[in-house]
Image: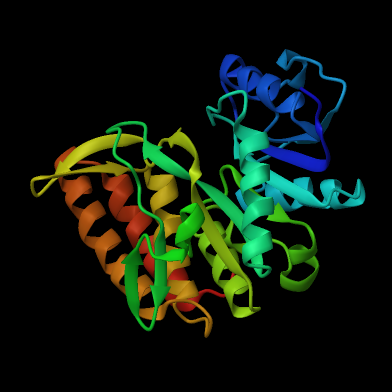
Length: 293
């Protein structure tokens, strides 16, 4: 398989399992012209297999997912990549994932010239459930709304950064990711900034992959939910509140999400008898309401 010209893959790694990461890089290296890995920790990159098209960016501390993505995208743009595809370190893809996603994007662009990016259909790795593509219009959250039904193309206002393929010219008009957010809501903020600038982001049924949507499963009033660590909770709540203040963001959705986070992780804190969840909620609430940084 020949690599696709002018296509760069950016992989963000934070204390990765080198076996899983090397498997991903092996799949990507034969499909893209440039393979960029950003290590967002002091991880020893010597444990990573060497590929001819591999470029490493080594951070000695966690700069956050947004800044790491920006470092990778800047390098891709400096290499004149016309398209960039982003990945988490634990993404699990098949051998034809990149060619299929690339071809789906080209087809989508022919039908809808303002498509900025394309995401695959995800299946929850814990449950096997097919995840919907969500769009937000006139204050309502909707599932699987067709952008073009002939090729199973859907509006996707909440596409995550894992396996999203983006046309490079979009970054010059819309900008990079907001590094002040550090980790959570980074993708959502960028998606709605894209939308504000007249583009759309789509999802396709033509490419599928599994993805983990949380770190641990637990029961929440009879419903199985997948939760994050207290470290992540602070950023989730803080960023939901901050972004609700932005004119181009879905204000009421974010306010509802902030309320849900407060209820969910208060429950989790009591259930686990873990004060760290309460500390994270208080910190996220205060920083979201009052801090500018």
